[in-house]
Length: 143
Image 1 (cartoon, rainbow, N blue to C red):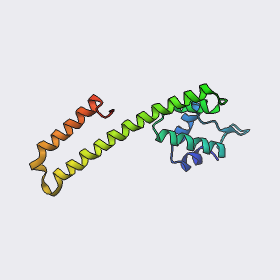
Image 2 (image 1 turned 30 degrees about the horizontal axis):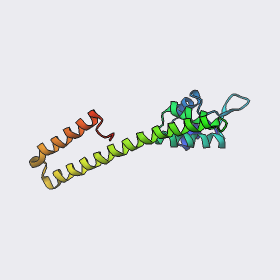
Image 3 (image 1 turned 45 degrees about the vertical axis):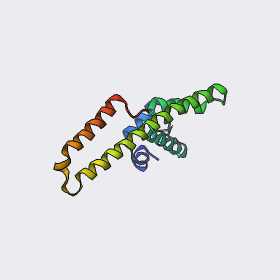
Image 4 (image 1 turned 180 degrees about the horizontal axis):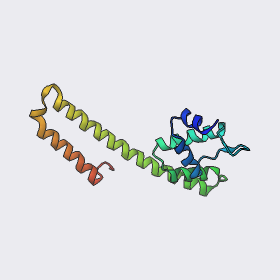
């Protein structure tokens, strides 16, 4: 499969595929004419990358995961992998707390606006938003 079709199949831009290649997290085979050939192995690799990106992994972290994946099984490799996953879990838990709080604020604002009550509750709504803003600024969702 060529880059245009490969990218379209996964709803990403060809430039994104090229970027992943540049960062050595996706390595397609080359045909005799120099064209890239994206095979089943590339598809599995891209699916892996897409999942990690959705989980919030950066390109550097994906590189680290791939490097660890390709190393021989060892205690050091296991410790490094568990450490990286622990960091990701903490990050995901922080995001969950943030979105839970955001959802509460949005629900409350909806209640305060519903049935034409905005004018009466304008100050309460602003107070809610400023309180949420202050929590964001102070990192108040990390607990």
